[in-house]
Length: 341
Image 1: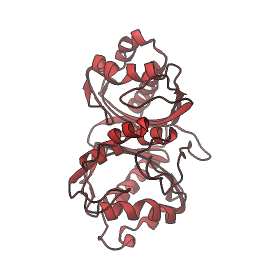
Image 2 (image 1 turned 90 degrees about the horizontal axis):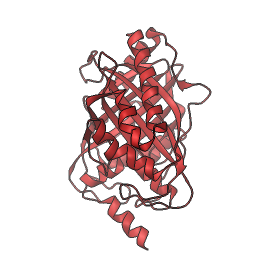
Image 3 (image 1 turned 60 degrees about the horizontal axis):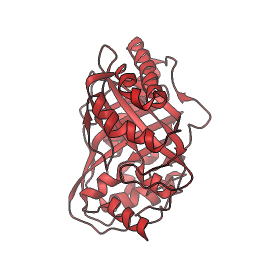
Image 4 (image 1 turned 135 degrees about the horizontal axis):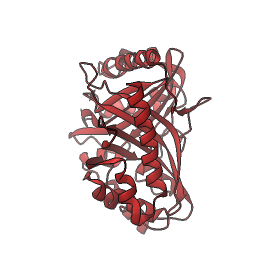
């Protein structure tokens, strides 16, 4: 596994570089060095999925590059490993690499219905890449935090976040881009800890008492929870409970984490992506909108960092446009209304 994982991380870094530096008319050729012919790209609202390098480039990559002709990638975390994302547990035989950070640049034209306004944008991005045994990328799960992007332009259709906006740092005091081989025993221990946290703690809510989830067993009292646009960052366990966990559980009290598309650990970091990973019913108010009573699925990506025996940092992506669309709320239509005022 170690040799395979090192190879996959190197190829993931090569693929990301190809996305950034290849000329527009050479993007298909450059990315095809890393992608399988039938690669599946699963992205964020308002986009839909795409299959094959040509569709991936025309659907997502080329429009992004045209809108941001001088886009610079800053990578905060890059880790890899074999997935153990099922509720019942056990290596599912799938090899993944996950990465995240910022895409910095000036937007010169609208893209996917998102208007362009003067100034530099810092787009939060994450990509999880599944590899076949030959080292080709066969599936990509990719989120850009569109709501945070809109907040930077004062075009958010949601209320002001309770948490602190625009907090999305690199890991504190360490390097999260793990290109060197890590100790397997350390990674295995963290994966087991993470499974207990996700399928035990997060799924343990008794619908009345936050303590039933036992978050204090996993999160340091001063944990830094870097939440998505619409929620903001929570800079302690208490803030996490007050600014995110309580409103989330009021809105979605029956939510459950199910089988995840992936979950893997390397060194002191663990990552998971699943589109979707959580199922729930929207039975309470959320971020200014009344309960719809509708079933929803949550597309999300997480990275956690453990320091000692507790999580001290958590980077969180939630596809808010996709979530609210299931609640019957078209956030992009509201953005268009704001743009015309």
